[in-house]
Image: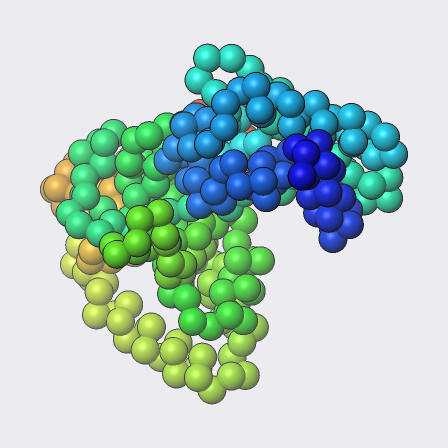
Length: 334
């Protein structure tokens, strides 16, 4: 079968299913690039994608031209960059040395959701298979995120305020994900099969998990789970350290509400949390570590930082946008 016929047949089949199709999806169906490599590309582990494509540029350009001509007759044809499932939501590269707009081609039926309105991919966190240290700060962590080829910890990825919900209860996971403004999928690489991963759970905001569990409290199994969770939390909580940390917070910020200082101290006092308060500096009640914990709390609780990340705003840009609000809150507590 000629290439032009194959491209049109695949595109027509895909667009008939859901009203839209991208050229990248056509490449996968042609067998020129494997979906697992596309997934690695989206997670920021493979850059550029062309490293995993099995044909040369001439073939790709020929297929792209067929797709463009097909999509231009009776469909809405657009280009929109594919974005990464990393903290900065950067535009992904297909090749290393030049712009390849054609790989971002998308088309949709006139009555379908615009093909440019692509859902921002979920953030993906990897479960560390062995001892891991962040390539940015050097801290150990049980989870990591790939960012521009570097493995970073949850603190450097601004995800350390999230809590882990193990996979297994689909209803609870769905509700928690819906309630959480910022969330990430946690996956475990298969040690026996390269490039295969298993979904082990999600990271969500603590309040979102509480709301999701409240919605499910009619379920006796979840009531039992809440009792176990509360018992585990009490066991993990370092009461003495929490009290000392709360005192240091109030010394630095005398006007901070007492319940807020206690909440920040409680959040950092969980054994094994890996949060800033559990670091060596935090355990020594270092002023910088205490301030860092308070700033992190304000960033996630008193600004729209998490919402900006979920919308695809790059991490540094999101921080620049909300810094004035953080400064206002800290000033009001000083």
